[in-house]
Image 1: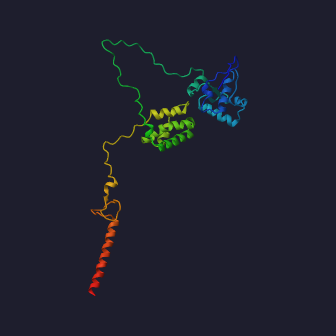
Image 2: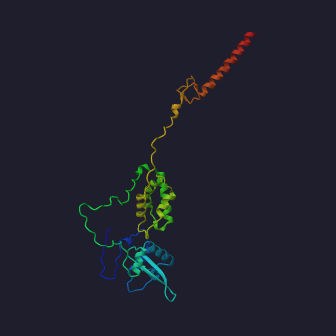
Image 3: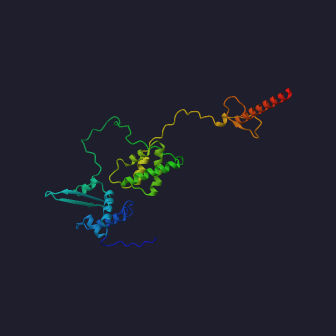
Length: 299
């Protein structure tokens, strides 16, 4: 691909690439955001007015505004003035803002940052030996090693993908693409392999979501890897495997088989059922023949 780009000298707006390539913003949402960012600071234009100028209709505008608010690019508040009238304050940003950061900008306060430690009175320098230190580690335990992919059944991976798809459809902040579902399914299948249910998996992914969620796939991957449960313990003693069925069988000693024939005896018999029946029939025939010959001799 060839490109020919000339940087404008005036009347331009600097836009991060994250907005242009945002995976969860529709074209209408990106267009609305670009219009709002291009409006001069001195102009008072509402979200709906910018959408009207950009040619975005009412239903599409509502969806676009909802997406921008979910991703942290747009914020609005309704308040009632001393005269009883209600007014709406709207804020648009080129970077996602949390609710606290947006309120701080609205009120003209610095955005909240990490709390700095308070400065106290100086303490005397320890003499003679090293000061006591806390030897207990306050770091989180290392993540549980995952199960190798080749040991996870394919059917379990397919079921895990369905669970992730249900989370993606029910929670707008955790929308995933088909490619992301395919990549995350083995991690979710490892949870199910270790005893977690589909309900456990859905609750773990939905509960305690940050506001806003900047990248759903990264958040889900982090939770699946960081909170992976321990594998079930292997029992110390294994029950002896049952004897194979062939070991419980015996070769028939009858003469009616061309090849060796195995059967499962009920006791200490050496003939299979078919041979025993044939032997019984032969006995009956011999008995009848003997009786007939005896009657002939008597006459």
